[in-house]
Length: 516
Image (cartoon, rainbow, N blue to C red; front, side, top):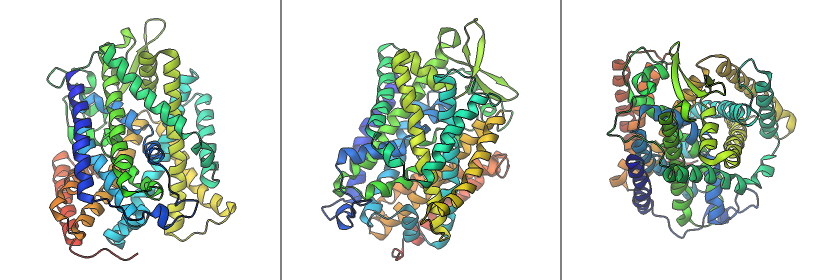
């Protein structure tokens, strides 16, 4: 487990040191926070640090840091190093600066932050990206908890032709529809501490069992000969190359939330309005992303162990059918039965934590994305309403706007379930839009530092911003549903976009912030 432990040390020690640097650069002080300056008893309410930190963790953590690493580990043990490094200098830094700038500017929403530090044209592009992301979040957070519930809790097939699959989807769908229109999330909010405990229990439990039972992990200097590693392009549907290919950008698009997540910045205003002191920001924003990185590392390593065990020993194995990667587990008759990528979650929970502990962990994995999906779709309705100035002052108007949103979500869900490679495609475009969203917050943070005469540290958000511009640009330029360009052209285009991104940041940073 040497590589895993090295990665864990990077995550903990690096997070402590780099988090301290982020805090020193931003410079939190004793000024009055929005929780006091705008206190209204509804949104602007002072709350204790532990509660803010826990709520933020639950807002940002769904199935992203679980399913992303489950698929990303197929690239090999290098994932156990890239996840913590990217988390420390990318994701956690992104969350900290986004949250602290929102706090310093009076608890403004991310769209207002983007408009203040960029311009109206970028704001409109951001609005499109955030709408696409929230739409895909809603679809993913019906698909994944629904599949896990169907296959791992109730024992159904989870197939597209199984009526029980659509009944479970329908229950989640109806809840989302109601929650998007009516404020029933306040009921769910009362049990958030329980869900938080379940989330931590599942990750910590798997970690200790994995270490204590000496799970068979692979080090980065060892051979990693799974089918996914040898036929990486098959898994991602990008070609017919029978070699490990295109780690950059595909790995970073796949792992997503464990390294960097633009969705997190859309949640910052909620907590920015309840912090008693700016000095709580490191714990609330930076450290909670480090916790998410730990969750991602545990699930990546646990999946690697299942692959090493093989189906015969209670793990999983993989085969390719028509260019699509399939997961298999040993059936009662000794043969292999196909399982979905989401079912790997249940296999690992039960293997590590037993029937009771595994059931508790599964409940957490199911409930957490549900409590994130409802807020995502509500945020989408409000974003569209704010952009086009559509009144939402009664249930009829809210239903009128929510209905077309849910028609789109349902269409995406049906396509993802019926298409044999639908989930892989849905996940990648959810992850891609998630990473693309982060570029806006990173640019705003860099411009903020330039405006505040802290240009010596502009490299902190700018380097991840440039890197992920290349990732997002090259991926969408090559993707079949994107521009379908050859890889050489896609990489060149990604680099060109990164240069434009950096130049735009420095040009905009020479002017004062816009007045809202």
